[in-house]
Image 1 (cartoon, rainbow, N blue to C red):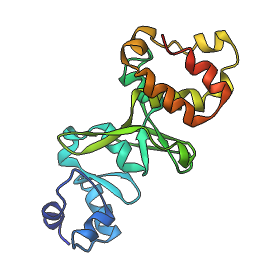
Image 2 (cartoon, rainbow, N blue to C red; image 1 turned 60 degrees about the vertical axis):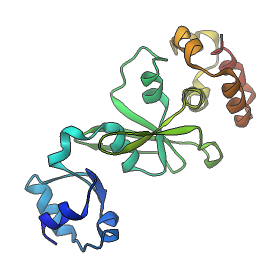
Image 3 (spheres, rainbow, N blue to C red; image 1 turned 120 degrees about the vertical axis):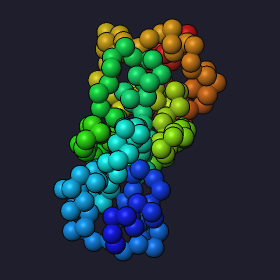
Length: 199
């Protein structure tokens, strides 16, 4: 396969070796390595690449969804996106039903934290100019965060240190949905601190 053939057979900025095979192409690792060295491709991780010509179009969120599947953006990334926490988040933090992982590439630092497969829900798809990504709904992002940090929240001051923006929580959270999602976790300690997030 020539590089021109790759461009004509793959229409998305991010692709995997499997995508090439499904498109009817035949590609070898040495070809991909050569094209990375020449600057045609960016290696995101083993088996997943992006076209360098599309670098400006690609969002880190799209990379986060492509790197490790199944996963969806949540935790600090989603909380910052919804304005629930004041901090700027410099990593892309996602939830996965698989084991914890982390990756680094030209688009940034990507962190994946494990939740039980029974809790892998409550996200939506965002379509972009160059692709798509998955992000937790506001209610689920908040519950994911409390759930995965529960061991660190043992007092009122611990909760205050999370520095949630109460006004944004009040404006954004759907109380009925939040309560329904909370029940699915079935954790008494989680309920105590989650209830504090509601006005």
